[in-house]
Image 1 (spheres, one colour):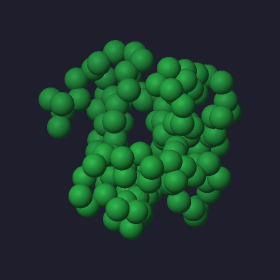
Image 2 (tube, rainbow, N blue to C red; image 1 turned 30 degrees about the vertical axis):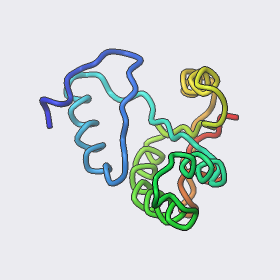
Image 3 (cartoon, rainbow, N blue to C red; image 1 turned 60 degrees about the vertical axis):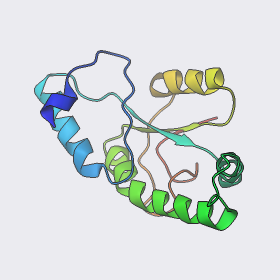
Image 4 (cartoon, one colour; image 1 turned 90 degrees about the vertical axis):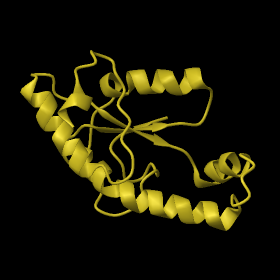
Length: 137
């Protein structure tokens, strides 16, 4: 794993997906060893109905509403530990991901410096503004 975690410089976005809480801890340890701790973890939020619309438009045969809802539930459950991990450290920011690429990019770039951090609540679904990190409209 260390070979994959070479320093990439300031302003870099690192993707973390389902089940990566152990990898997140390893990344934090590696970055700390380099003297370059993680600045922020960004959670991109999209309303379930918008996700259903986006995913159903891909044209895959198995992309019906129920299948997509099931995938979203699995994703929410599998990413919760990662969101909790970064939320407990005060590094988690939730950003509204609806809008143009430029609009969402601006929200991401300004999230860590524009708001005060807060820890997520113990319950709730990932991807909803009521329980994660900090909300950026």
